[in-house]
Length: 86
Image 1: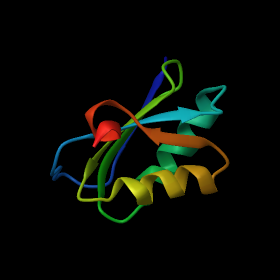
Image 2 (image 1 turned 90 degrees about the vertical axis):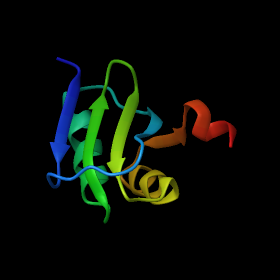
Image 3 (image 1 turned 135 degrees about the vertical axis):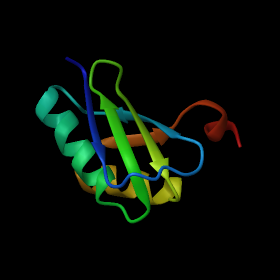
């Protein structure tokens, strides 16, 4: 247990965008975050790990759109790794 993945298509483009997601407490939360991320236009795949509080998204999408979707669903989100420093 711990990771939920959805793929919106067979083609994945661009590097993965890594997000720190706060407010998730269970697998239901992870499924909800996965669903909202997967519904953002341009997302090829979304993987959410509730235990780590992380989400990884691939596709042709802006990180701001991903953060907005997660926040609109009632969770916190911010970029992690190198993208957060840019």
